[in-house]
Amino acid sequence: MLDAIAAARKNGATDEKLKDALALHRKAQWRLDLVAAENSMGFHTPQEAARTLAEAIDYARQAQAAAQALGPGTTPTSPPTTSASGRASIPR
Image 1 (cartoon, rainbow, N blue to C red):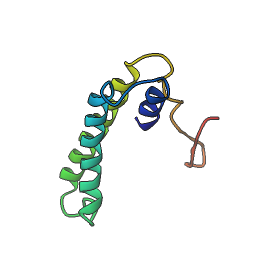
Image 2: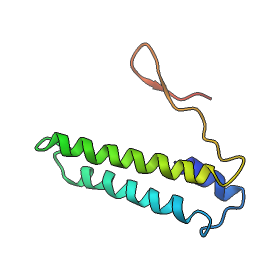
Image 3: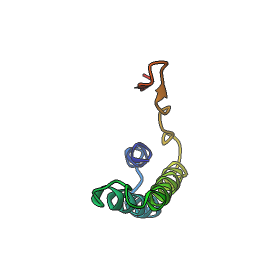
Image 4: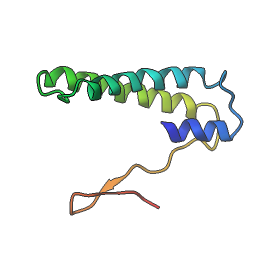
């Protein structure tokens, strides 16, 4: 999401054009912060933590799509993949 917003800015998108993407980013960040600030990371209410994190993911993807819709050059890089050792590797 942040890569898509940065790419859109690099290609000349103004804050006004990015208004929807930035608002969705803020919604996603609030939900992520809520789970992180709760301190038990969902230990007491794991279903609610999972629901809140799912909302954060949804808002983040919507923000990414909104930024990408602004034009060429805003397509993000490939997502990280998991190797046989279980460790994430980022494609270069």
